[in-house]
Length: 462
Image (tube, rainbow, N blue to C red):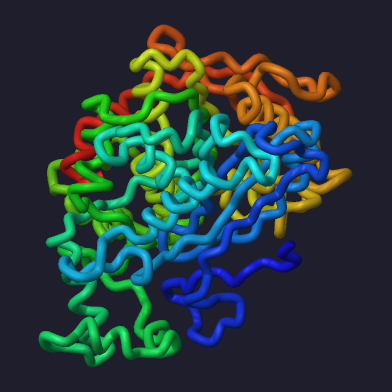
């Protein structure tokens, strides 16, 4: 039996001498109750995020989630290749999207072997955060929505819709990477294969997308390969080319604050930031975008007075509206167990830092503050937000077990009934400060903005 975790996968923009990462990184972690009988328990298969450029939540401790389930689930997590190791292609010998294929291999492994750990291969919930949540969407739409029976429900915290290039368009990444390493000519791939991990890591950093002035937040992402990814995600969703399963999709109130430039002081700087991440934005779309997202700050011309405006725009384009699109599509396809949420649990330190309720902050509560790597102080025992963890754990473990967040769970944990999303009642659950939960309407203005991005999503290559 393994008694220690393997190393993380090599990450873009990280030191070549980190002792926590390695090329030898493809490890699976299985956590199950000691009394589990072969093939008996629901499985939660979790995909970590990191923008497809790093493993952000490697080696999670799911003990708290398993305890919250009454020791009635098995949790699987794993590493997958990221950056150039997972998403670089020469269009010939290097297959595109190897990082996604790593994920699929784990799904196949679960189907074949999870029963030995007490898991039921016919009851698997696929979950993920950020790029992991986007991976969930990709697996829903993979091969035009072909269902291979790998999973039977999904949870997704802040699915991240980034600019998606074709294999041909992404060749510039290979050319630049090979050139930086001195590998030019017909034998460039052989040259790259002879480089050490340290040499590769020294040149593993972000560069601008085609047509952009500065590097995006995350450079290496899945590309359209015509096989696994057959089209842009918004088009696949709108065409109904996705697997129809019960779902939970959601986001955080201020999901863009970690990514928008804090020193953005003009509308032009905000627009430039958006263009760096979405270089297919046209001037006309930028004009419409600026009208939809007025600057909420009254401090201009103070340095950073457009940070919040840039953050609000980026959040909805990248995270919140994609979550809505997928939730609506599943509900419209007849999935009655399709649920939406917003995490609005305010931590004092995060609020003072101006972050609000930042990207994927709910994941600390899902794991439980005793088991999360570095939860906010208010999430810990005795803190105002300590009750938020059992609340979200109750919903998540219920869903993993029953595909319904309202069925089962600890009766001592009092939570609101989570109403499903439907065309007639577009309501989402809100997790509030102190652990309160309540339903709220999605809102006409937000719905209108998200409809705009859904309309122009393909033009943005998302």
